Picture (tube, rainbow, N blue to C red):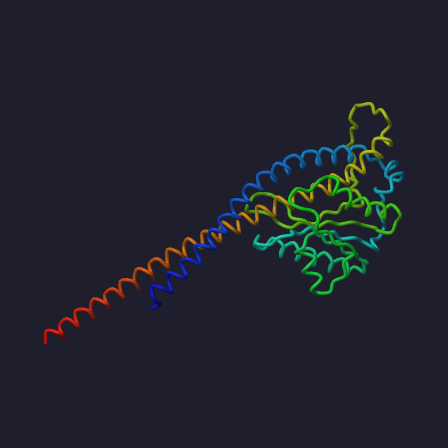
Amino acid sequence: MAKARDISRRMRSVQSTRKITRTMEMVATSKLRRAQNRVREARPFAERLTGVVENLVTPELAELEPVLRQPDRIRRAAVVLVTSNRGLCGAFNVNLIRKARELLAELQASDVETEFHVIGKKGISYFRFRNVEMASRRIDIGDSPSPEEARELIDPLAERFVQEELDAVYVVHAEFRSVMSTPPITRRLLPVYVPQERPTREPYYILDPSAEVILARLLPLHLVSSMYRALVENAAAEQGARRTAMKSATDNADEFLTTLRRQFNRARQQEITSQLAEIIGGAEALKG
């Protein structure tokens, strides 16, 4: 059995680690609340905007707007992977990287030329170590993404899609469903989804200006909104995963400390018993 002094040293080490994990759990919880608010604000706007675009699109308008171009075959595609800049969030980044690798493998198996854009230090480090070519790398997008940052990401890709240099743009990010559920998903941002089936009964409303003008103004906003939603969903999912991981680490530290305290008490009792036995034995030897 280990000595009481060694066990006490291990207890101090575990207690120090527990303070760190507990603090990180509290920080992640605070950031998670703000990130959840951003997700709640972004989702309704993106969903309503998508509904408006889908209701406005007609076969005639689809031929006029370049971002609605539906290529017969995807020959060149861009994949945007969103990861985190920091670790200690469980399997969050591992799952995102796995999802991106699966998408890249699927596209390459279909003879699609792909270019890879990575956001976040964790994804960049992983693919740089494996010598995977990256068209662009961004590490300046933090816990509070802005619509301007989303615009900086999607506008160059949309311009290249309009010029027919790209046939599709995909983004891989985590979807925030709950603190315990943050699965990685793939969204196709370009070409913009056009429903194949139109409602049989058109709604009664008058458009001013025309549907063509409205659609031309809404489509760029729709792309920015979709990218912004991906960024805020990923940021919220990251904080949720980090909070879960740090809570689990703190709970494990508590259980380990309980075990170490029991071992310490046993070791200390054994040392005291041994010392008493030596004292008694010495006293008896002096009497003899």
